[in-house]
Length: 144
Image (cartoon, rainbow, N blue to C red; front, side, top):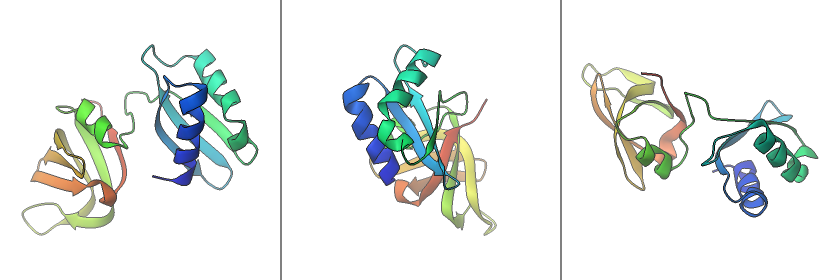
């Protein structure tokens, strides 16, 4: 987990405890992009409250706050567990075997069929693929 994600989560745990931080990432060198969720949904008012609560982040970065949308990011084991049975794209830091034929790739798309505390398992066209969370660069749901 990035230090910016940790800072955002720690601040919002107190200021907006019902807000779930899905992803906080530095884009370029000057912007933090933040995807949030809330049990009652993400509204413009909630985005404004989150923006104001993150004054320490805004001192160093421009801040973009938004809802996850249809292709919501998956960054934690609980995210993967919540969406078992849905299609996801998982991109890894380094190329891995994609199955028969010896092809190597960094991007895998398939149905989420398992999520432990250490890895996620996808049923992709090339077969079952277990990917440790430490190897994941980015992942998100894909429209079905």
